Image: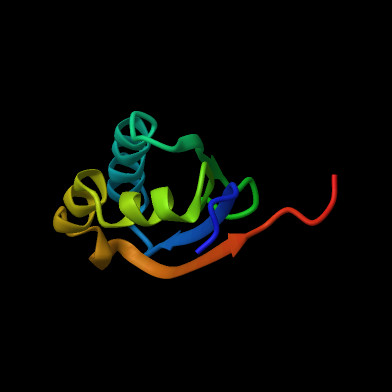
Length: 100
C-alpha cells in the first residue's frame, strides 16, 4: 500500500423512498469523518439529474489512513444503522492522480 494521497469516489443510489433516510445517515457520516486522522477532503454531492444519486468525493493522506476510516468507529456506526437496506446501488473507485 502506498503512503501517497488517495482519492476515493463512492457513488451511491438510494432505493426509491429511501432518499431522505440514506441522506441523513450520509450527512452524519460526513460530519464524523471530517474529524478523522488523515482525512483531507470528505464531501457529499447530490446529482442534479437523479435525486437518488449522491457521490462522496474523498481525499486521504494515504491508503493506510483510508483503510483505518473504513474499519473505524464512524463507518461502523453508519453500517450498523441499517443503511445497507437503503442502497439500490453502490460503486467505489480508488484513484491516483496522473495529471494536473
